Image 1: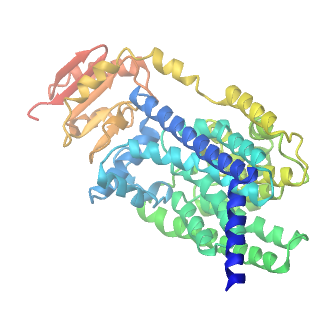
Image 2: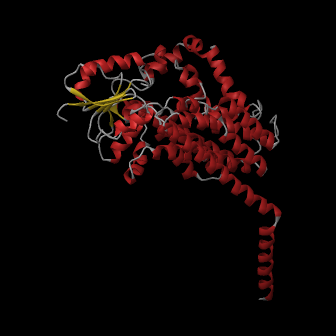
Image 3: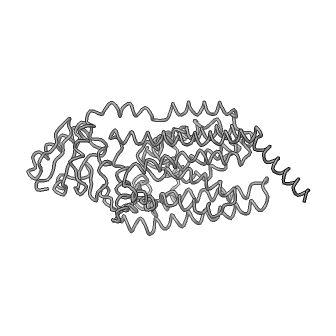
Length: 497
């Protein structure tokens, strides 16, 4: 009995000593600092996207599109997106909008999307820290790598560009790798399904992830055989999940909900006018592919991706980049320059694997820069050079119509069908019918109850001359009466409504 008591006392004393030890206190401080940094990053991201929206600079493509679809789902209506003219599943086969609509049931607000997006992007900082510690990287270095991730210009820029479900993907992929490494198989599978739900094309990234895991399992010599077998097994599972999800989207979902055209297919039109044709031509016409792959624009894009992180990358630890190749090749082969910058969301699936390569490089001592403070400073410099926070200067300079727009919005009821400009549309997307200039022709204006136009700042795909031409056309239309006219903002309502 006395020996048991003495063992208990020793255990308790040892526990108390450990709890009061400097290393535990430091870990507790670092953990708290991690949450403070991540929370601050999330708040900054949320504030940036919210402020942009309040300043009437969020757009119909894509915020109003997704907001309308999610709103309609929350109201148990068919999510037919009137701006593009088809069901939301016909866009990117992204069924993630259905669970997101649960938030709109609580309160239908576009600010849910900004909050979810900022949390999704910022949580990657936590994942980086956890993965770094698994590789025996010191806590201070792990914190600096988390900061580097959160300061990546792509994170800030993609968050600023409306809302896209792609924003959830970097963190989900990083946590999936952590789940794999900690043998949480069900979580690994769940996170891959979550990624597949965000966008059909992301299924190819899941295939890339699986291929990387299989290659790593075959080539690794330092890990035990059980770990290699598990990695190979789950790599195979990832390949199957990715391929099945991609085929379901391409063969069933997209043709069923948008039989006219698959979204963004025009960006690869030189390879064909269908998914099957594009894949076949990409395989059978390598010279055509090469002519679009090896361009100076693509060289510039690769430099934009790599140079801000060159301090941590090493040619001896690039295996994780294998998983990013599907997304990278799609971007390189696209005709759209939006795929080849750090402004839009198309590079988000590449970012987590760049950082996994940095973690591998750092843990093996290959990194060019290893001092935590230097890593943070270099990351801040990259952020200041490439993050588009300077856009707000332009937003603030063009606020001469904002108060007039807000006044006009009060004249629009929830049941009105609306024709408006791209920058105003996200403020009126909680309705069944909303279209934007110039997607609707002059012969269609009779289909709308309300037409709202800002002639000074008409927004995307419309200039002041075309806005003025529309204004003259509306003034000449006897079916509408002008209800609002101030600061270049005009609201027309159909007579009898």
